[in-house]
Amino acid sequence: MSRAVILGTGSCLPKRIVTNAELEQMVETSDEWIASRTGIRSRHIAGQGEQNFQLATKAGRRALAVTGIDPQDLDLIIVATLSPHMIMPSTACFVQAELGAENAFAYDINAACAGFTYGLDLASNYIQNRPDMKILLIGAETLSARVNWQDRNTCVLFGDGAGAVVLGGTNDERGVLGSRLHSDGALWNLLCMDSPESNNPDLRTDDWVGPHIRMNGGEIFKHAVRMMEDAVNTLLRKHGFTINDVDIMIPHQANIRILKNLRERLGVAEDKVFVNLSKYGNTSAASIPIALDEAHRQGRLHRGDLVLLCTFGGGLTWGSLLLRW
Image 1 (cartoon, rainbow, N blue to C red):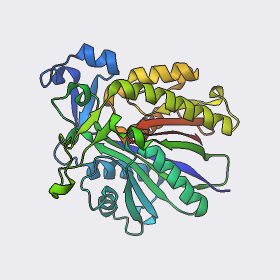
Image 2: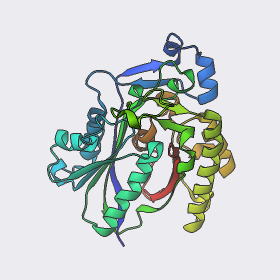
Image 3: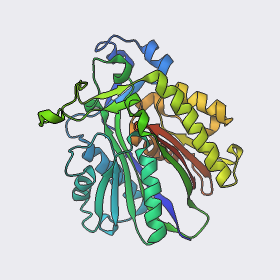
Image 4: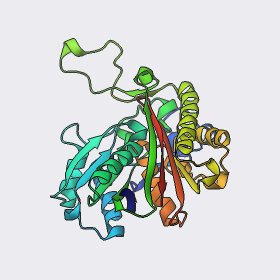
């Protein structure tokens, strides 16, 4: 059976870097408060010419350059995002136009911070059915446009950026081995973001406070650690592995306390967990593909490595995925 294999990676970060010290001038907080509670030291914030689709396109173009695949040879473009350039058309359609990928169909998915992992599972299923497909999967966010900059509990967490992978089919030992994906819509209000206020007064809600991210941090912490631990252990058992078989774990970069607690509960060695949270903050659906690209460029990924991805986001959505590099 053909599997989906990652052929190339790429990423794009906005030019502007905002440090914790700069946030001290904007909201009641401090570098020590942010760093000790989140592990974040800085984040990239998009500026002019760095719309979501523009970051996504650059990340996609860099991933394609690694593979030598022409955009016209792409069959599908998927963009995972919760901060699209427009509600319609999709960010993926903008990327398609920018790349000149006229033979590809394109659409967005929104599974919040879990979006890239959901997208990787989706792409894997396409390729199992059509092994000749070439798919560009991108996680891209401009969360600076979606946070309340007066709320110190959320505005310090998020950053902008995009990461991309190109996928194709393989019949060797490499590729996506399996995934474990979950959702629980009953817990939606722990991490959510409203749409713009309805133009239909009958559909307006009494608790609408603006189209920005809202989060119950304490509850999210408890659910994130427990749910990701369960998704990882269940997936490993299903495929006959233990955590010791994993060569590198690339988790969603949300909060250093979550990552530390998860690592300890799983019993995975610290040097096997790739973390770049301090530089970029939480880039939601872009965090895992940015980390994948960085790990790849740093020589941390070797052919045959067992790679574990795990993620958690609003919805609630969470899951894990195993692939052989």
